[in-house]
Each structure stands twice: as C-alpha cells, then as structure tokens.
Image (cartoon, rainbow, N blue to C red):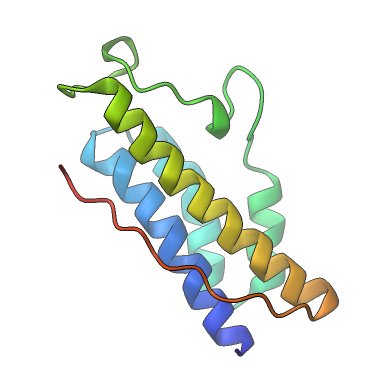
Length: 121
C-alpha cells in the first residue's frame, strides 16, 4: 500500500467522524478536526499528524470524553446506541491516524481499515 492509500484511508475516517457531529448540528468538533482533514487533502501527512497532535483527546473536553446525551446537544432516541456508534467512529479515526503515523515514521505497512460509515440508524 502506498502513502496515498494511507492518507486517503485516514481522510475517510476523519470525515466520517466529522459527519457524526455535523449530523447532530454540533459544529465545535468538526471545526477542530478540519485542520487535520485539510492537511490530509493536501496530501501532507506530516502536517496532518501535527494537527492531530493538537486535538485534545483526554480530559474533560477531550474527544475521547464525548458523551452522547441530551444535555450536550444530542437529540437521539437511544443515547447508548449512539454512544456506541460514536465510539466506533472515533476508534476508526484513531486507528487510521495511527496507521498513517506508523507508515510515515517507520515504514510499517499495516492494512488499511475498513471504513464504517456514519449513517443515521
């Protein structure tokens, strides 16, 4: 697999994660993730990884701490199902970025991940 394939895989994963928030009309995370997406679209993996490193993952306002609930602006019938859906999209994005990082930094060529789409269930 080529660098281009790794970039496209990471781009697709980040885009699906962004679409999750867009579908819920929550613009803050897509705005933060847009710099990563733009760097991937420019086929600049070093910049994309640098921008990804600026995204808060842990802590009270981290991406990994997103809770699907009405209190945070999510309007869903089954919050636990939507939380699982979000977790799958987040893990997908993190795996794709990590695969890109491994390829860029050490040449390790892990398989591309299958992209799980953000579709309203």
